[in-house]
Image (cartoon, rainbow, N blue to C red):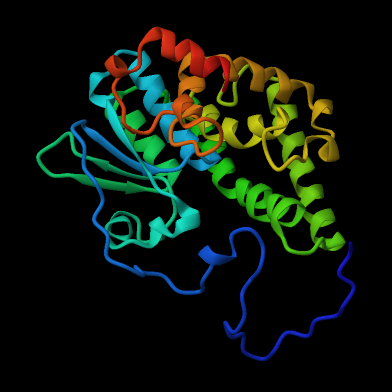
Length: 291
């Protein structure tokens, strides 16, 4: 249905009613912790506090790619942060990310732990730390980072805009859905035109730009987000489809997608301590087949 009632904003907005929608309980106009809660710390160099959303998948895919390249320093413990339960407002999490958003990373590989928050910052931190998946040649680096930051600026229109009003808002508002559907399709066209020129977003090589963009726009292209694929006619973006399939077949991407995932059989997910030795080939085949 459409919401045709007119709304006149007050002179000063006040928080005096629930925002409504699927994530209403997590929305508030103030920052900071709501309760005391220490975060667990495991045995590996990287301590990740996250959830298997598109933003969370960026980092687990990156870590899995690093492990696939043989970097043992990228071993990590993945601790589940249930945002629907307000875990992101615990004092321990807020100490790592004052913005109370997943993912958040504590790099404990050195003598002094380093906190990193915001998914793009985490990808850059890991790429520079291990010297891979981010070009060093100036022009290639600039192209990669341009697409990385394109994602940071664009995805809120997809998730908080289209996804919210199409799938999660308590009422269907025609204007809002039309506005964000138009912008989402424009963004898909931006990607499709770029991927008509190159194999990956940064050029010939797979980089953190692809890792950042794929969970959002690859997921959308393959019908994994908001049930909106048919509505947005995602099959029309042939180059995005090709790119999404190419990246989706990478073993590290398949593994990264199922870390800290809430949906499905818990036995077919990866949670908490992550160690390749704890995840045998038979189990991996079973999980990836069902992912």
